[in-house]
Structure formats: C-alpha cells, structure tokens
Image (cartoon, rainbow, N blue to C red; front, top):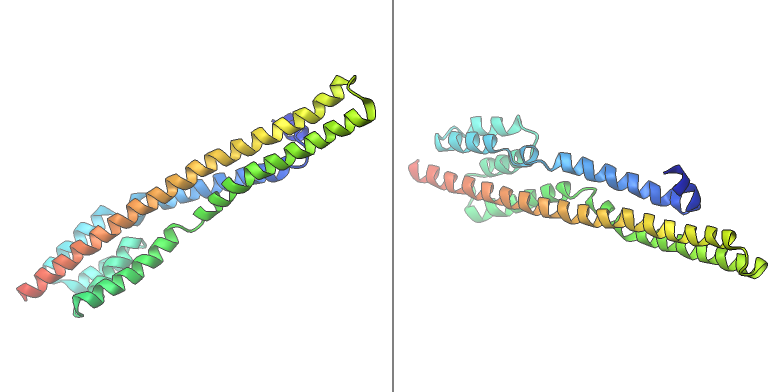
Length: 204
C-alpha cells in the first residue's frame, strides 16, 4: 500500500485524505441513522397509549426523556394539541424540517468526495503523462524503465481516485435513501399521533 502511495506521487495524499474522511462520515451517519436512534417503535407505542388515556403530561414527560427525532416531533404535537389541526401540522412540518436537516448533516461531504476524488486522480494522470513526455524529450524512447515510471504514476492515481469516488457515490445515495425512509416513518408516526389526539378530543 505504501509503495502505491509513493508511486502515485503527491496527488495520492489528498486522495488518501478523501478516503479517510468519506469512511469516517459514512460510519458516523450509519450509526446515527439507525432506526432505534431516530424512530424507536417503543416510544411511539408508549406515547400513543398515554395520549389515548388522556395522560398528555405523562406523554410529554416521556418524550422529553428520549433524545431522538421522534420524541421531539411527538412532543410538539402533544404541546400544540389544543390548537387547530392545520396549526399543529404546520408546527410538525417545521420540526420535521429541522430533524431532516440534522439527519442529513455530513452527507454532502460524501457527495463532495465523490466529485473531487476522480478529479484528483485525473490530475495525477495528467502529471504522470507530463513526466512521461519529459522523459521522452530528454532521453528519447529508448529508456523504457523511465517511461514506465510516469505511466505507472498516471494509472495509479486514476485507479485510486476512482476507488475512492465510486464507493463514495454509493454511500451517499444509500444514506440519502435511508434518510428519506426515516422521514417517511416520522411523518407516519406524527399522523398517527394526530389521529389519536382527534380521538381523544372527541372522547372528551
């Protein structure tokens, strides 16, 4: 591995940094976007049951003990339960946008790495070809070993850039799809709570 980094020239340093950054962001978001850390089913069931029993203060207290997106969404619905449904939905949308932005935090970094890593590889390729032509100009076509050094550098940086860029694209798309699914789950849970609040109001 070290030999490849050296053979690829100085462009390999930013490519290696990009790979470390992309891996760190992906693992952190993968951990943060687990369903139980965003939309825990147990919280949803317990909060809905308390609301059905008209124990709204207990439901709010329960939500405040959970540091997850669903808890903040349900807490807002419970706090605004006396307001018209349209107002509650607007407030829920505001909270939902904030939670979505928090879930997407860091993901654009993967998109950036996916864009610049192949370009860095291309930069190294150009540098390697320039080196190759300089050798040809100075020594002619007879010294194959020196020519191979420049060509090798060009190919290694291209390979490295694509090796970092392609997985970053896949990781970026995967995390965005995961966020979309979690947002849908949040919307579903909030609508369920609105239905529970409507039933509680009718019962009262």
